[in-house]
Length: 205
Image (tube, rainbow, N blue to C red):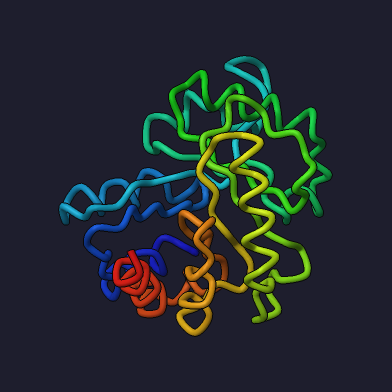
């Protein structure tokens, strides 16, 4: 979103009580989103959508974890679009996770592969099956249950699900007891739908 679109979004969004809500916004909106949340006393955390695998130094154009830490407490790492369009490797993602963790950020690590090695510096695993992203059809509940259970068993970390999460699909997704939350993509651009999803998460708890 642009800055104007972000402010319009906040006028229609209502965070659900009793639910941890994290908005992962573009670098250009980190400071402004943080200000809006503080000014309106909203119970929302801010996250970045990516982070540099490097620390502070001569890396022109890179946004380091220390820079993000000024405005956010969470960061997304390994999102399917970053892997697809920017060819982020497993090694690079491990460096990103380590940089973020060292700066005190909470790391949300996205993956579609239950066999992928999850770095120790990761705090939350986001399972996002490629075939479910943007199709409007989430992964089958029994597969979500199996994969998320495997991730939790192997890592001991909380697991959330992402892939066609909407206010129409959220109830069936949350029926899988292995899911601790959801990673919302396109539906999050609609503040009313995002609010509804949060409310349904609270009602399901």
